[in-house]
Image (cartoon, rainbow, N blue to C red; front, side, top):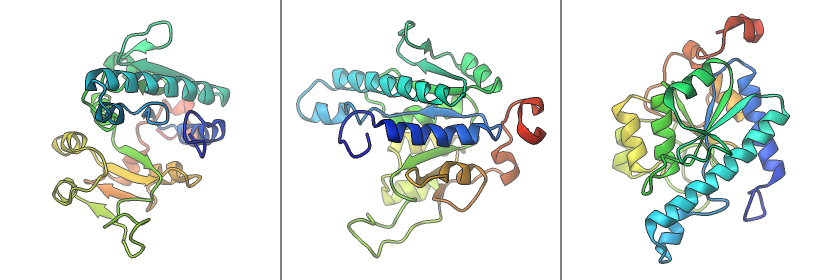
Length: 242
């Protein structure tokens, strides 16, 4: 939403799309999960008295709007995409089917996973962890406005220091607000690493994918050479990397 406080900023949308397109150009298979807080926050609405299931359903619909906007931005950059929604709306997006999503990734398309898990009471974080495991992703890149996980809120505590690496248990014990506890537990149980980094810094997505020291790693990363190994066919990848 940029500085507007609500809705979708065309400038921010274009910037994020360019970051994704740049990584996609390396031959990396990319799946994207987008929240809907710039339009509607289900948890906030439920706190104000709205039925939680209804509020969460509205929040999931907001993620579909963001996903369609991202699809449009990516395709204007020449990147083929598919939006797969956990809530069926066939006129707008494909229904989420795990094998179909994997096939799209294998064909070099960016897959945008919309509508969360399709069920209330689950956050976008949990949806990201679930989809990542279902398509056998190597890592979750948690894009935020902060360049990693700190000992305290760096805005409120200037002396706070950034962690370079944390275990899943560290995050749970310290109650660090990286992702919700369900998502962290899912990642821990399936050895899926998370990298928390600052999306507002131009080029950071590519730096993370290339294994540079950006952000905070939660869990154990695979060897660096495999970080971008999940690419397309060598004929489709510049330089033949796979």
